[in-house]
Length: 185
Image 1 (cartoon, one colour):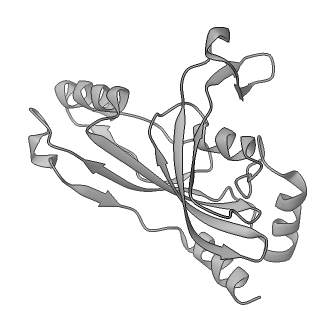
Image 2: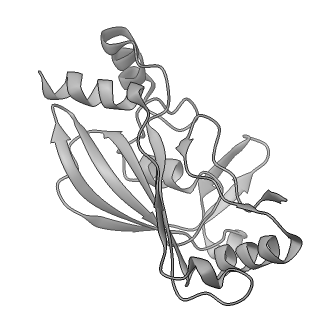
């Protein structure tokens, strides 16, 4: 048994594990090809996101900075695509449903930063002033990024029993409390 993928530090939600070598290998293949598996995240971001959108910006690891950066494919970056849907707007913040079309390291965090709608509480790519304000006013010091759902298409052996299945994880109470506080303003 082993993990098929991992979540960034301070990201909550669903993780997948393979119970057998064959199952784990198949999950790796599904995640690599992106066709028969879908992953959704919920995130609170800084600013008013006006409409649904797509971020297609190649990503490359910058080992000197210990960060992932937007770069050109010819400079060694890998294609990356994130689709976002506006769920709800708050005073200066927006709750998004994000779909990972690809699954690069720190993809959502870097893509949201790239479009200047940083993930609340992100200490690496985030808006540090906004993070401090949220921490001071609401005592929220976590990163608001939650792996909320995984769904599967028509799968073969050894995971055929997961075909067309969907799995959801409820947001942590800390996230819900922050949203309630923002809504009450």
